[in-house]
Image (cartoon, rainbow, N blue to C red; front, side, top):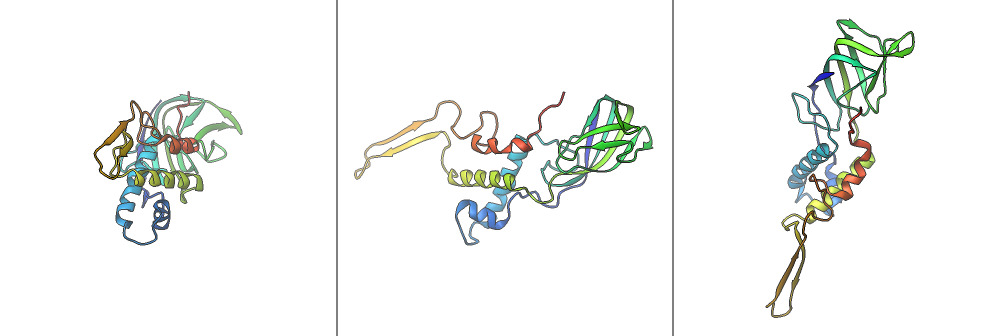
Length: 216
């Protein structure tokens, strides 16, 4: 099966945290860092999306927040259709080879996994079609608490390490003459960071619910 994903109604805001949550994450109470934090929120959110392998659709950058999508699947021969996006899936319309199917009669969808099952007489049957077009909503209207926690932890770590070489393990400065400066460096992957991505391991471990795994 080959599918093409198009974002028909993008999310209006890709921020995972509110202004108050960003301030809380780095421990400030005034507005002095708001502009930097808002930009950092978007960058870290993009890293989280990449870590979770959120499908990219034409028309907008990928996000875990709710969008309306049109997915066109061709040469469909499968037990279930696995939609490219998931979480709170609501199918607006589904057209199989030109015929519109009715929800709960012609098909059913699991809103969390995005698995669409073809029905016939209220019994599952195999999808077999030249073309299936699905229009649906997927993603979160309100950012769930565990995703917020991961984003806040990520921001706290990123802010604390800004301006510091992440490969620097320790720095020792002799006092008071400061004649000796000793630096030691991490060899290989930097602790607290994923070996293959920008998301630290401590944050990546909190993203299991949101990570997309191949379904074979």
